[in-house]
Length: 248
Image (cartoon, rainbow, N blue to C red; front, side, top):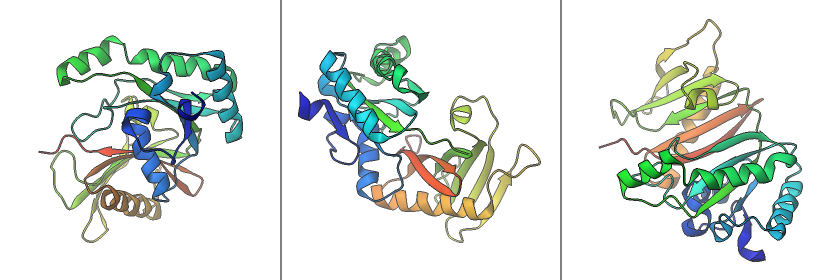
């Protein structure tokens, strides 16, 4: 079990072993994108929290030298070209060492949740066995999502960036109305913007940095991408990248 129970992000790309979300993150690590460090509790030990596995998880947590982590599901069919599983599986943020094992268990349990089962049945998929990603928590000052192709108009020249203050969870859950920017890929200029408050969330330099990085991600993967990102200080981190599944 020791060799397959836990693997660092960036060292294994087997979608069966680490799931779709972790595979994309591992590819980004290999591609030298700025991804928070972490590890994966693999599908080989799905739903089998033995004392040996608990010790291995704690050892890997301690090696991160992080006070808190993000714990996220990574099913084999998750973040695929046709099926994203967006919002179907559980994610837990700001998890400390004492709550880590419980968060991993809850991610496993989400594979059998009513919403996951309903989604799997609709798509003809299976949710489990599931891997779980544990990453050093990045406390973003401003976070959001970005699409390398406009997900609504499907205009190939228009990139869309949405941003909220703090963590992206408020945006993903629909609690907060985001700032939004439409960028021309041909010129790199902002051609449309909407700020929900008087305070601008992203500087022009930050918008440009996100846009250029998302363009690189699309080129890296070879398909249009839906990207979750965050700025911590002046540093841009990529938290997730998956195919845009709504394009015709």
